[in-house]
Amino acid sequence: MPTFRFPQGFLWGSATSSHQVEGHTHNDWSEWEKKHAERLAREAHLKFGHLPHWEQRRPVAEDPANYISGAACDHYNRFREDFDIARELGHTAHRFSLEWSRIEPEEGRFDEAAIQHYREVLEALRERGIEPFITLWHWTNPVWIAEMGGVENKKFAERFERYTRFVAGRLGDLVKFWVTLNEPTSIIGAAYLNGNWPPQKKSLLSAYRVYHVLAEAHNRAFHAIHENDPDAQVGFANILQSFVPYKKDSWSDRVTVTLAHFFTNKYMLRLTRDHNDFLTVQYYFHTRLRFIRRTHNLDHPESDLGWEIYPEGIYHILRWLKRYNLPIYITENGLADDVDSRRAEFIRNHLCWIHKAISEGVDVRGYFHWSLLDNFEWDKGFWPRFGLVAVDYATQARTLRESARIYAEICRTNTLVLADPYLGERSEEKERATGTAPEIPASPGT
Image (cartoon, rainbow, N blue to C red; front, top):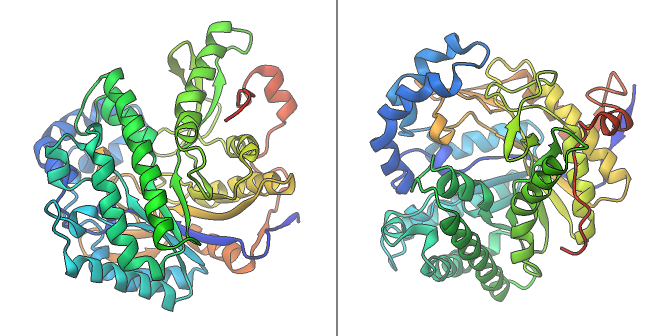
């Protein structure tokens, strides 16, 4: 059986975010949920009714309570239990986010109990031999930030720098790896272009403005963290997609791919040039584009959310990132799979392609599966199940899924063993000939 050994010191883990798992947050998202839960429940069938097994998920998805985060996974109180599970699963690193609205509930007033709580979280990870990766901002804002215009207001960057300086000063002795922002392009697309997430705008001008405000926020945070600790490692969580033209010989489709790659994958890296100690990959999507429109490939497997599963895409993204000459961490990669029928294969197949990139000289140093726990999936609520660990939201009981045990063996041994040497692999030559392989434009520079 083919055996793939990962580099010594490779980090294995999983990830969570505060609003999705902690419970009882008070921020712009929690306020938005209350106002829109009934509408989201009414629209669920229109959005997801085409998916397989919809009738089984429909009762939950059409219940307004599904869209209120509420107690979530009660991770705020159960973090030690959850980290015991992570240690049991052989995880050597864990990525989680701080809830800004807890730390600075009112402008300029920092909550000592909240910052002490996060010290205890970090100490719990350290005691279990788990390296923490802290995310400072995972989409949610204190209500007072939202009231001043959120991330569209230029003052956001200044407020974020102040928050970062406070956190770095109080927690920096326990943290080496800092992730400033989570997926800037996701929030730009969902909240300022498509109008699906708060503040539900559809404005190219607003989207452009937010790009630059978030880039400035990251750059300011980068300097603030390094002033506190010159040896700190700082980056931001970047969602990257593999794009392919619907027709390889179509000029308009190829231009669409080039533009999508630039604004989705490349633009934020350009705006934060020289302000990253490491790069990240958050990989979920392989997208076929036909002149501004997405198309669907019925031949490829999908997650419960209808997201195409295409492991090879992560290899092409990693090869493209090699030009930046920085260490790379896979800070999110996962799928919604409530019956756990595809997750183990998903993990193996993606790791196979990650190892291939490493063998070709790409400096990948860690993999974080999304997610450790089932969690609150934003405007989709609780019905999508991403966790290695199943959560019964009625009792908060945790149950290991079989895929968690399979991933644990990889983590413990630092080795991927495949029964089939071509598991999940496709012929690159064949795919390029048919125009179905990812297209990463080889434009010069950064």
